[in-house]
Amino acid sequence: MIENNLEKKFLKIKKFFPFFNKNNVIYFDNAGTTQKHIKVIEMSNYYYLNDCANIHSSDCSLSLNALNEYKNCKQSIAKFLNCNDFELFFSSGTTLILNQFVLIMEKILNEGDQILLSYYEHSSNFFPWIKMKDKKKLKFLYLPYKNDFSVDYLQLEKLISKNNIKVISLALTNNNTGEELDILKIKSFLKKKLQNPLILLDAAQAVSHTKIDLKQLDIDFLAFSGHKIYGPTGIGVGYINHKTLNKYNFDPILLGGGAISWCDDEVSYKLKPFPWNFESGTLNIEAIYGLHQAIKFVDNIGVENISNYEKFLQKFAILKLSKLKNIKIYNKNISSSIVLFNVDKVFSQDVASYLSYKNICVRSGDHCAKFLKNIINVTTTVRVSFAIYNNREEVLKFIKEIENGGDFLGGIFR
Ligand code: PMP
Image (tube, rainbow, N blue to C red; front, side):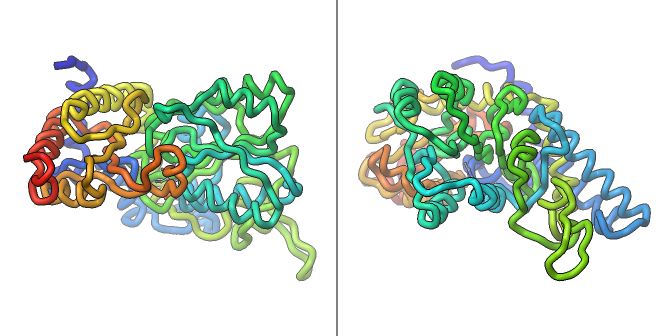
């Protein structure tokens, strides 16, 4: 058996996730959402029990406590992502933020502009662009892929050299194969052509699996959700590079309380500076308290350590799964936290339902990547996605259940 020191350390971590004390479930749908660390739950409750007041609308000490926690949370995120806290804004999640990013870019998009996407993109980074495509007559280009479903950088270099891309809008880490994009490599292709497209990264999947250093990446936009990094639902973080903000002076899409600094009449008003103008309305304050704990938890352990451990589990699962007959694995050659597969002649949802019956939670379907079929040639798959609290024993149980078949799979395997 492959030895792994991280496993010994991480086996102890599971007890800090109260969900597992109550539920005897093997949870392999971490790309859907993650379970919550005890401190995340405690601090979200703490806000309601101790500091419950609105952040911007009151001068009482409760409000100031909440405002402090808002600031501290942003500082922790800025340290975690290596950016400035004044480049960050809170919103409800990746989906809303990506929609906002596409809409604020409308003013700089012209007919025929080229947008680089991938067929693997999540709907929330695809459909806002499809809507904008209609409005602005944009042209989409797609990341090229190799037969093993990994990115083909040779072809990508050619694609970049032949075109004039206005915006690159991609998931930093794919939520289907788990592949991590090499943004610095992509930027080196752009340099050769002296091209300077805006770069938007959907980091919803990346945030808890891929080390992000925004100073090094020097991209324009980034978004992630709290719930995929052991944090609460309903909270997301948007990043806009201060140089990009200064250059384009983007207007927010939503206006309301907290965003307006001055108004004279119906037409004359002045917006507060970023990030206040992008945070109209009451924020999800308890989730900010919780997210702060989630970020600290992951930052203390180190995303690289988490990622190495998940890759170790993925390799182990692929090794075991490859020995079974009738299994097609789509991301065999991609080192990541995900195993994407199908059981021959069994509908993916039947596999997932069968595993659920055995208390193993996996995901089936298109995983919100509606165009995934353009690359892997099937419309649905089964997805196992790992997190820090998973282990090899769970993988072996999962393999055993797949091997044994049962209500749905028995006909195939017996
Ligand atoms: N992009 C990717 C790559 C994702 O994995 C997800 C969540 N599954 C999203 C976007 C959307 O995130 P949310 O539902 O939190 O807005």
